[in-house]
Amino acid sequence: MVKVVDIRIAPELIKDVDNIRRIAFQKAGISLNSDLDWRIVKRSIDARQRHPIYNLRIEIADEQGFDPAVKWMDQLYGTSATKKKVIIIGAGPAGYFAALELLRLGIKPIVMDRGKDVRARRRDLRAIQQDHSVDPHSNYCFGEGGAGTYSDGKLYTRSHKRGDIEEILKIFVEHGAKEDILIDAHPHIGTNKLPQIVSSIRESIINHGGEVIFEKYVVDLVMRNHKVIGIRCEDGDELFADSVVLATGHSARDVYTLLHKLGLVIEAKPFALGVRVEHPQPLIDEAQYKRKDRGEYLPPSSYALKAQVENKGVFSFCMCPGGLIVPAATSPGEIVVNGMSPSRRDSPFANSGIVTAVDEDDLRAYKHYGPFAHMVFQAEVEQAVFNDGDGSQRAPALRLTDFVSRRLSKDLPDSSYIPGLRVAPLHDLLPDFVYRRLSEGFKAFGKKMKGYMTEEAVVVGTESRTSAPIRIPRDGKTLMHPQANALFPCGEGAGYAGGIVSAAMDGMKVARAVSDFLED
Image (cartoon, rainbow, N blue to C red; front, side, top):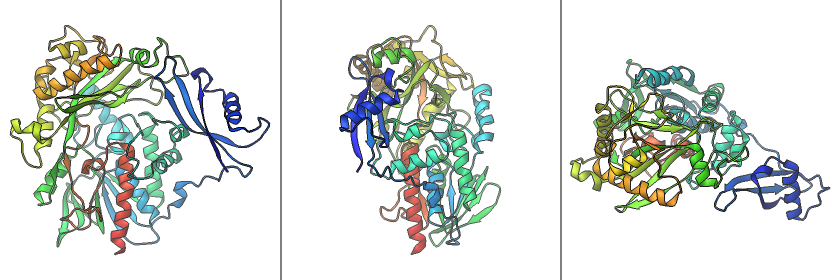
């Protein structure tokens, strides 16, 4: 029988394996001379007290040892069991994990993406950073791996009821992620590691009988008697299958337009909009760890902050310690920013989205109604910020203290944002209700976190792609669109996920629903 013990370790002792074993065995009442197997199954940092401490959960096996691990990928049977084919539009986490689950169920997935594979996609990312040129089909949101590939790789989720999180993490490990993600309270892969992992997942899909096709822009659904039987691409090609999964991500506005044109119902969905704020990482470390030098045994510190302003939430989103701010526009003529971190989180900066909820009550004054209300509002803000500038991806910015005081900054601090920053009146460029809430939210955060409100921090606009502004409805039992037989909305773009892990879980859930549909 496995024994479980929880212990606390000082940061400087976290790599002392013998000491960890000694403390765990003593607490479990097991002789130190025993040769029983043991392992760390959970690891987190408690920084609430004066001195940070590591919390570890240890499992100690009996004489039989631990049960041998069964690799998830060994369950993929290929497509020999059935001749059924499923088109998956989108090669992000929802699409790729749906493909893996379909292969496990003996169904052939054909994954199609408007963008490029991760290697070719890098050139287009450099073009945004250096040349301020946005390719509408290949950017930080579109292309293999979706928005998650180049936005940090954080794997933390609160969506425990949606699926097996450990299953998702094990698949990442089997494709090259470090096993640390299985035990860390806030697992993180890193932007520099994700491309190879995503490529490895693609190879698994292909090696087990699936297909992955890039640079295929789907412009129409082929329907017969209210059933989706295939897709039509911009180049005129048509492809037919037994069902279609829509896993197109939160920025595929043209997909929403297509569904509306076809007479398929879509719904406006609340989302969040705001800015990115960037601090020097040592400032965040000192505030959280209560020491000027965190040392080599503590990772760059993060934070999670929230406040209620005007009965609406203002909160931090996608916090990136040791990270970078990147341009995430998906079309020319707009400015969107996002955050990411490499695996070592070794940038001297920490950034986070600070956003506020936007719903239909907020938009009545703008006379935006109907299913596209939030999407149109989102686009108008992004375009207004772009039009205030010089036609480049240089982002509008203010020092945090100036933003809160509603004044222009004389200059700006150093920043990780490669296209460059420009002093701009963010307090006027943002919708007034958004600015008011953010300003009051920042004041509240300054009271909660020592040193947070500082002129060393810079506010950058706009953080607007927090989630999809539209939901594609689906039947609660079949997961199909209620008006289109064999069409399965999936993942973040359909409004059923919010991040890499929850999108992956929804992809697998939808794949099982597809299998049930094909068996009927």
